[in-house]
Length: 444
Image 1: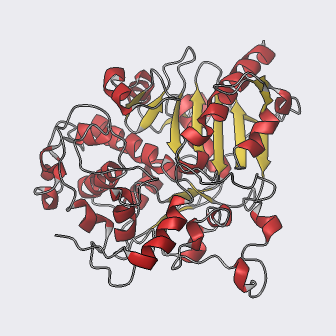
Image 2 (image 1 turned 30 degrees about the vertical axis):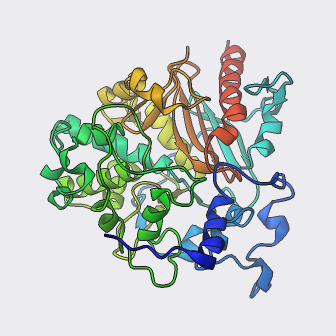
């Protein structure tokens, strides 16, 4: 039995830091301008003033507005591993920037008054957004601590990279999607994953006793993050010492293959499976399979636990334009650059499978009020709207949005005070679709 001494006054401090960034806020947060980390001077100075220092051990790195600085500087506060872009020259993204896009209007979900794309930038605490149309940058804007040359925490966008890589390995025959997890990771035989299949993990249709409710201080997500060192551990902590150690403790609840249930542990398990199938860490696999093949501008990096294991569930940090390149790779059906259509980096069949989506009936019981009719496949979120759009999603507003019909890709980094994307979906989702329709009309 795991003993976790996250109690008493220590609970009040660290849990408050986490819950302040969770799915609800007790009081309205300062707006984007008032919480701008550059304006507030977080970590500015030599040394910074005591009341402007962001630390990991006291939980301040995950309090709002401090995390508006941290999301663009995660490497400064913890161990990381590098994801190499290789030695080749970056692949240029042509520019055709347009001044008219900030005036594009839409009506937020549940509202009657319109909002503009420009207003949505601050409303969603956006740190940076790049819009590609037909492969060219038509919009690029930054705010707060993120600069064009900087990097930002991708959060759960990380999952979509590894769902894609796993699907590629399945297509190549290196992974058997119908095999049990224990075929690749025998250490999980006594855990909830012991009788789950690789496919059930890839689509998050596993029956697990694991809550991702950020508003619940007892949710297993917090135990998971403490085990991996992504959150500070309280004095006397005697729980799991790494991500892999935590995975062994997850117990079964319900049956595998039933309803969709979004749980970050699935991606950490998938990362372990990928490591075993390839003999390489997830960072090495990401570099070889994607990062070194797209002409990325910057290396990426991963947050790691005390054993040096990369956080496959949410630990990736990248430049924003490189994030857009991943979306553009998907929009192009897995092909990238070069003469005669370029190189097939991801099999067309893998992209097509993601675009078709998963079982909508299995997705519906999850109860996402802002995502009616959606599904989940290979760790991508599929809208099934008239444009066939699909996206990668991360807490606090991270997004890659691919609209094949409009030939549009949106890459966004943000530091919204509410973790759950329900806090920004009402503004973000209609804004994405409105911009897509506008670009289609303007292109005629």
